[in-house]
Length: 140
Image 1 (cartoon, rainbow, N blue to C red):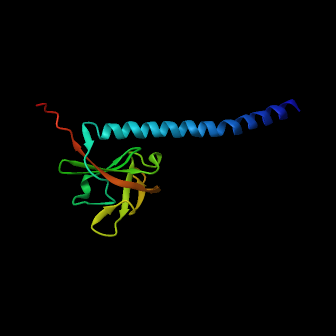
Image 2: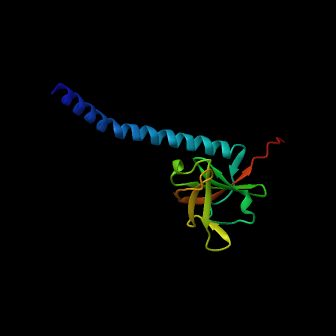
Image 3: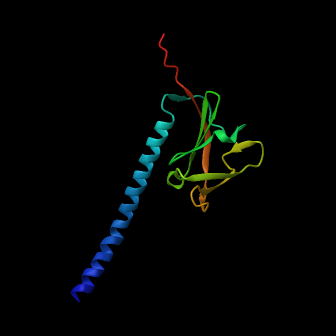
């Protein structure tokens, strides 16, 4: 009977702590996302209005940024589209984007394939594309 009570008590304790563990995980993922984003846009500043779509001329410049989203460099501008689920996109993910025109848009269907295994790893959704340009460090 004591063993049954101990097992039941452990189950209750786990059920009570599960939401707290999930919240801790979410907070850690958000912190990792914020740190990765800060590193990505280091020495850059936001330089204009966010766009639903951007023209993309060379898809080789499209970069997956772990726990952030996608980045595309065009000239001196870095366009960043953050994912709505930062933990869904990792360094081994290859985005397969179904575009419906010549531009890359936030509502294009984006599936992820694991680079090492070739296995489908999920679908991600993005926010608008935000432009960042390098800060001129020359003082004058």
